[in-house]
Length: 254
Ligand code: SF4
Image: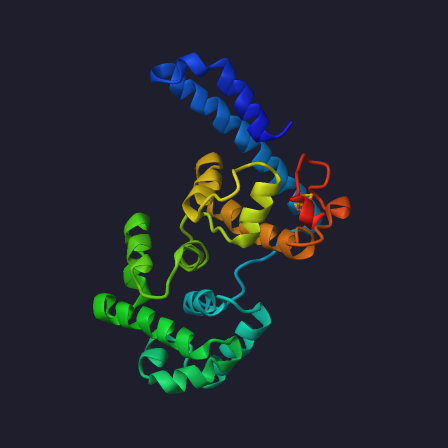
């Protein structure tokens, strides 16, 4: 029985008492059921794939740079761009601040969309220098919600990038969501099709303990699952580590 099926059954049972103390009780019951399923999924993935050791990067700034460069490209291309920045001795806030836009674009060319991504990196760097003396250490004492809001206000930094920076560079307990997360959660009926980023983040964030290491590993495992098994077309359910769990596929993708 899927979580949503369980949800509906419990909801019907308690439908006349969904406010006040009993409403809170209902919410905790549902949350406990979702938590159980999410933990089961996590354990199956960890047993199958092992730890993913995310995020690859030697420094906090390298992780941030990678999070901005990885939009719409493969990690292999990001690595080439990062290698270029390293060999030019520019992979620091100061190093990028002193580069002009065209030089930066040239160095990150392998990451694709290099003109756009150069502007995004510059937007981040300018925000850092304009507000925090160009020093990432000055962000450490910031409240997570405030830091998230400021990152999201930087042009070109969307929720997935902001949350990747928060989780992997600043070790804040924020669950990162992407297209793989959405596909897997919908196919396993953890959430309705069409759920948006915040609804998906809420699903994981509210029903798991706020544990940076758990969020780190869980997101990485979902990416691995999405790449290796839960493909848009021709999902490999038969051999998938989650194959024994209830799931549905859109018939066109069977
Ligand atoms: S491949 Fe199939 S079993 Fe595996 S996660 Fe996707 S829908 Fe679930």
